Amino acid sequence: MFHSHLVVKLAATLLALAGPLALAGPPALAATAAAAEPAPTPCPSLAVGRPGASATPAPPALEQSRREVGGAALATSGLATPPEAPVPPKVTATSWLVADLTSGDVLGACGPHEYAVPASVQKLLLAAAVLPKLDPQQVVQVTREDLDYEPGSSSMGLVEGGRYTVETLWLGLLLNSGNDAANVLARLGGGTGDVRGGLAAMNAKAEELGAYQTHAATPSGLDGPGQYTSAYDLALIARACFAQEDFRRYAATRSAQVPAQPAQKAEGYEIFNDNQLLHRYPGALGGKTGFTDLARHTFVGAAERDGRTLLVTVLGAESNPARGWQQGAALLDWGFGLPADLSVGELTGPPGASVSAAPGLSAVAGGQGEPGEPTGFDRAGALSLAGVAAAAVALVLVLAFRTRYPR
Image (cartoon, rainbow, N blue to C red; front, side):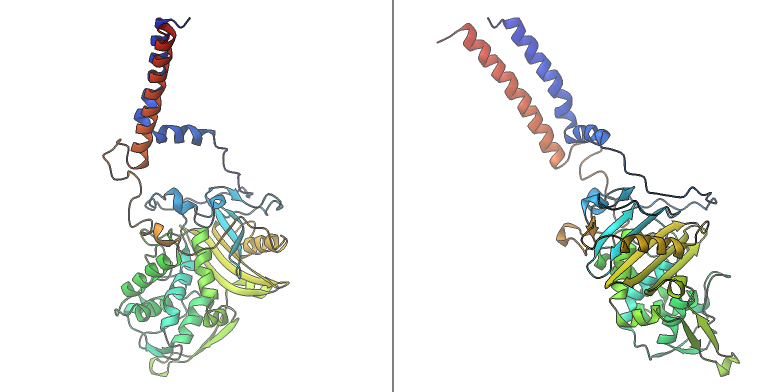
């Protein structure tokens, strides 16, 4: 027999269970699910001491949909590789990515969407943004403002008042990582008469490419407030660069001549490509190196082997026991050793209208409601759980009534 006191007790239990769920909604369930998720697979790494660096403002929070750009498997702070793939080589880099430059397939990555500081590989974004806008044969006169960069940092040796072709400036930028050349090219490419226009063009290009974790504060990659990128974004940017014929030619140039400036009594000289991958790795197509105290060693390189062209991006590396380009070379070797049909994601452009703002320009936490108030799906989920609980209680009462008072 169905006793009334049991009905009341069961109904009270159901309401007690449903109450917290109805109030908390899906976030409570999501927290429980998140706690049950396995920890990210650690990236194979070499234990090295890292010198302390000056503090930098924390980058903005990144919503989950943007962590999954390129594929859900890439939304990890750890290792993302195909199950069939061998373990990648151990490196000191804090994040990296290997991709097929032609197809865009991502072969493997470590923390692909983790924020990092770019150093001079940021110059690739400058190339992606303004190289198509400039005539390589245009002659440009260097101003005093163009030579305003951090003393002791890399330069191609421009002199105030000197006159150089745009092509010479690109060679100085990519071979010698010229911060002076970066200032001139940003001034020209931005169309505003100063580097601010170039920076605006760079950030607009990052948005266009879907590199939503990238923000340029300096055209050269010298550390600046709020400047960051990711291994995935850097691969998008590098792929856009290698799609340009002029860039491929500049990046593969081993040496170039900087002309004399008679009016300034400056002799001409030769510059050499400082990307050792180009000199020491068979099939290398070039790329870009970088270093600052904050960013540590950064690297981008591409190479061709057996009809395949692969790209590697490396961020946050130390130079011992292997330099940045050597770590990139080891990762390229690993990628070339994989079957061509293996991948964990893809280098993709903007995912349609579903993404409308770059991270860093808007906060993504909190939604539209008041703090602690469910919004959107959260509110609907809370109401649906409350409805389920109420329906369950009603069903119990109906059964009790029918048992005690049958028709």
